[in-house]
Image (cartoon, rainbow, N blue to C red):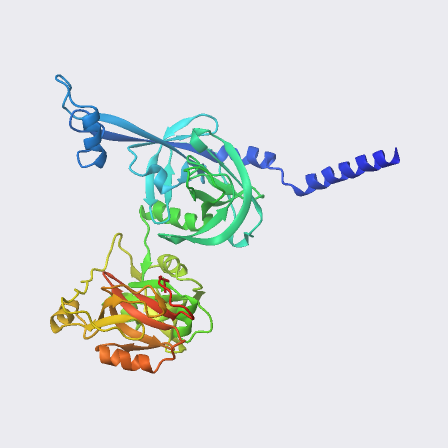
Length: 478
């Protein structure tokens, strides 16, 4: 009997302990749900050629034209179709301003916001910023419930968070989890330090709020990683401090003004750091400096490694576009770079980014000559002709004819144009094969070598790493 009583006591104690440690989202969800909205959009699609809902330039057009050939009497005039989609959002002001994702309302002809009390309003798009995926809507209403804004600087990995949204159109759905990581960089997403969570996010949650346990919004749910199209445990949210900065610019100007430097960059690897004489890999390595751009005017050079921008540390290359982008154009800011084995302080006047701006470069053309002999790295190189140097606007460089198995690992490719060799942070521009081989002979065979390479329209730094033992074919990105 005593054992039974003791067992019941321990079970009750464990249940009480779990109740004290596991969070209760019920009150929070009830209070905050009133400010979360459903965003539905309608896009008018005009169908061409026999009423098929595909443009003749669409690859699917010919396929469906064969499946559904036109019959006599079938109307040939264009028809209109409605393409509908759903998302989420949340109210940030009592007079009807709503935040959501830019991709939720992209190309929409009509946007409707549905409140928690079932009222519906047609919304005006005040502005949208595709680089951060933030959009600001306005509905004609007053006295609306609003969310409270949290402080993202106080977020901790592992703390509980929850989301409210409309996954698959199911309104006011609450899901919960923890913060998995902060400041997460994603491919092709250079302007947002995402909050990563394991909160269940699915199509329709986009644009909805991510809350902390104080009931404050700390992010906008934006993306998921998925191989199936549904939730797989990796969700990404836009930090609310960044989103609020964007919405303020959209509200005041209808667009976002971003700073720019006029450079292309890459991340630092361990091998690159060794080549540049750095104790550890950090910062953003400058590949290309735009002629006449802000960086060139500030004295920044290809091969510089930016360590700080406007006093803010640059740990990864992905940090730089975000920090520069949030800097007001026209501002003069200090820039700290690592150059030739030492830190150097520069001053830069930030330019203004124009959307879809590109820097066009001419690619080097390969010469139709017999194959050159390979050096000890397995590189068959050839010098540029005078015509090629004039066309490219450069005074030197070596074309990679072939990359043979020389007992090294490298991402160097045939057709690459080698501009310079980097040893201990010192760059030496290359003009002849003899010069390159001479420099190579002075470098220990066990040392990693770094080359500054032009590849098509891009410039990058590539490492060549010796392979110990058996020669191995393969590539390793530098």
